[in-house]
Length: 222
Image 1 (cartoon, rainbow, N blue to C red):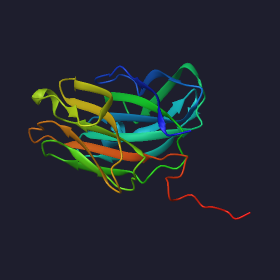
Image 2 (image 1 turned 90 degrees about the vertical axis):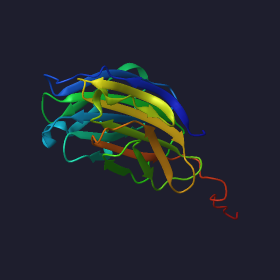
Image 3 (image 1 turned 120 degrees about the vertical axis):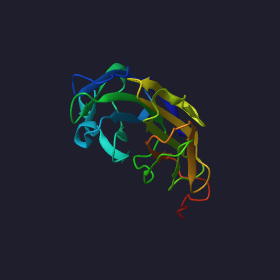
């Protein structure tokens, strides 16, 4: 089966969350082979904004990659291969502490390999954030997530296909996740946003196909 998108889902963002968990439902179709969760946290305490675990239908996901700005915002990607299929099963993202601006969403895939590319992160205060994701190849689908302390300065717009977004959470930060087809060995994932000198953090990774690309198939002589 060729690599493709199965389904997406999106949590209701919580500002200054009283609890440590962000929960929403996702439905993996019968052919789903991988579930990925993109989540962001914003708070001045590093340990609080970090994610300590993610589950889907009570099964733990594995950490793929993340990027922190060393000041206020943190973005992470988690994954589960061969997820349970069924309607509206719960995703639970657990943060290290309370009073965190919590955002998250998910995208599941069909025809994916178990191994992803190597994740790449970036952080800065420049306008129009971007991260150049390495270890990509034609035929991959690259997913990326951005969190910015841009607040009400301006909107954040993805260059790829939107997975989910939350604008001006607590009038303080924007989060946006996107997907796009890979372009060669390095794929640029970018957003249009006037940061106003505020910090942002982004991380991306390539989802690989379970079918080897043309030219990489080993033929065995009978």
